[in-house]
Image (cartoon, rainbow, N blue to C red):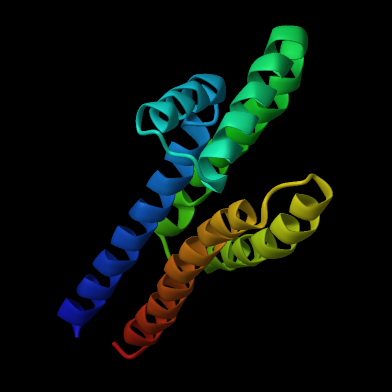
Length: 165
């Protein structure tokens, strides 16, 4: 019984570490967005890619570069987006430490992941984001939601295992 409890707890923590790392990395990589887009744009030209994806990268790079050259303060919004990802990653340390007590954080995360879909499709349409890119954005909600759903299931199982001892 104790072995099963320990294994379930270990599985929960592995999933949460992957989720936390994903949030943290997506946050940190939002800071140098212009440099990242410059590199991606250069690679698209080196590889001679000429498709909708490469055209979107080029358009996005030029938009960020021109905006930063004239109005760099607008990228402050991206900095706050990055900061929010890092803060949310920290939030998930609670369930990492005590999953049963902090299951509400997992539920919050599932709701946030589900909320990506209407945001991507509604705001994406208003902002002229190509549909394929909206789907890429939704993939983060899909993957994150699956990880958290699995984690929620395991926490429920862990609760039952704890109550049966």
